[in-house]
Length: 352
Image (cartoon, rainbow, N blue to C red):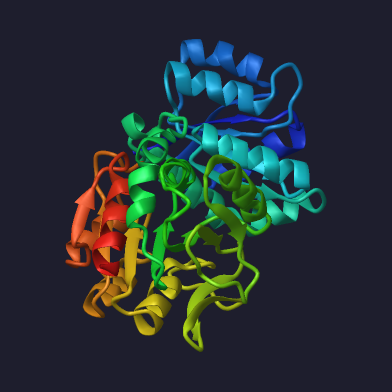
């Protein structure tokens, strides 16, 4: 089956280069290109592609506005192709929150060589986008009602002993993490997170999560304690581990080879939690393509930790959770909407 792609970018060079790169894939065909979203909207009235590759900063209508309108009417999977500038990273994180499936970073110079070198990455992003569940793809605003309604009850039962909640996610994880973290109270045990995301984008994503949550959300630098009320996000391009420092759990951040094609890797995080935290942990695997984290979650379970996987119905891509479930790595399978409460109950049960 051929995946039909529309490219929306105000740069003619970018449209030509991306078209050439994508058309070289045996299963991908660029059927339409547009220089801005207004023109694209006219094309969409006649023919709808399987996937849209979208720039953000464009004339007449910016990519974020176009994406929001698209998700509100008839969702089509969107892959963002954005610059690595600070503004580009900030806008790309907004696009992911609005419903985009993935982000491919483009540099401000050397564009042609970069895209050619990243051909496989572009192909994979488009193929992944073509497989998403459209019903789960629609952007859902964070709903802090659960945390607000239950925080008083949760505070009275909050434990003070060191405990670690490890979360791994990929495609669709931006929205999933926003929803889950916005529902957790400040008394929640320390959280460590791997979200597959390009380098530099994680800085902006951590800032965004921090504004939406009662938790202090930080991009991990290494050496931070894993403590209640704090969530540490792995930086793009680096692995994140949890290690012991005396009686405390702290974050270790390091550059290393990709594991399961990813850096940061969920398996690297989960394996470290299994080895260094053991049963004083809850492991959570959510929406994402591939199998990163499945074996690590099983290792956590075998070491006595509690483990949770997102269900198929609420997953944008039911890849990582499916692999974990098939390995028998998940003690609990639940929807995204029930995930925050499942995490809280797991941690409370184990801490007692």
